[in-house]
Length: 97
Image (cartoon, rainbow, N blue to C red; front, side, top):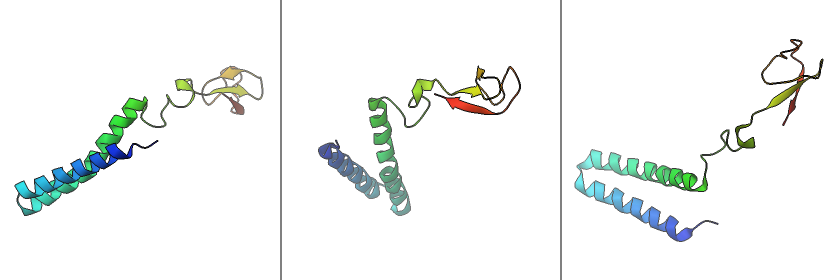
């Protein structure tokens, strides 16, 4: 569930910082700084929220807790990791999760 109150507060904080920078800095620098704040502030908030949830997207920790894939050779039925079977050298394999 999205917390709309904190979302609105963050938008108004970003807007206030942008307007403040435009008033303090001369013309082109104030605009550049305001655009940078308006672009970077949501990214910072997103990273902080993702850290609170316990992950940074679809990494190795999200799928199978970093266990990776294991393969079964179709020729000799050997379980291995990698591209080539360590027992017979075959490249024919099926994935095992």
